[in-house]
Length: 243
Image (tube, rainbow, N blue to C red; front, side, top):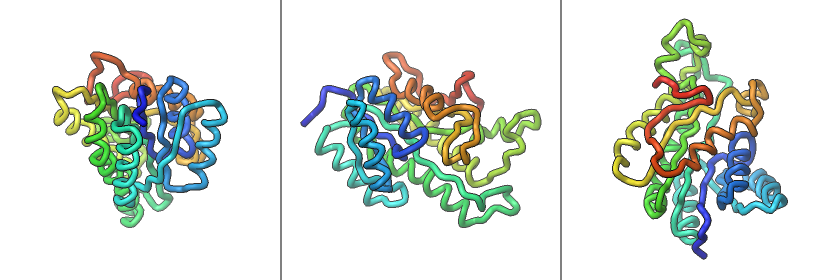
């Protein structure tokens, strides 16, 4: 049945920032589709949202499995006919990542495959559905670690964070934002890179200055941008981030 509510897909939505983004979107009246590769965690997250009376469902989605991405797109098309919001949230880190001279190439490859190529694959699969919406929004969950400007500034707090795999994956994701914003110029689809900040999640080893609930607020705000929204920006809570 085609819903009159906005439809959102959040990747990596079974925990952390992804789950909180899904929760806050659902609280805003959006029907949220939780994309997750772990069926057990997806069910637990879905039960959590449904227990609060929120509109949500889950689809199997593994960013390293293009068949699962295609199947998810077909499920959304069959059940909803369109997609209003895509949040590319899913991402990984790897303990073997590190400075360019010593980082494990296998770790770097895994990170790039998920954080960039996986996000690109999902975006490509969902674009036909986003084009069916009246005013679609794409939010790429980036990081200030993906800023070439900040990585090259000795005065930046991010200067010493030499994680060639993770940082490069977010810089590549930012390139997707830049190029897709230009490719979609003149359409009703708006895309932005959003850095949620240093959030306490499993990804950061529960280190950070913000809760997942706090970290979800800015991505949600950009997912819900109204008329006149600007596309192709890289933002964090304090304002625009340099590329």
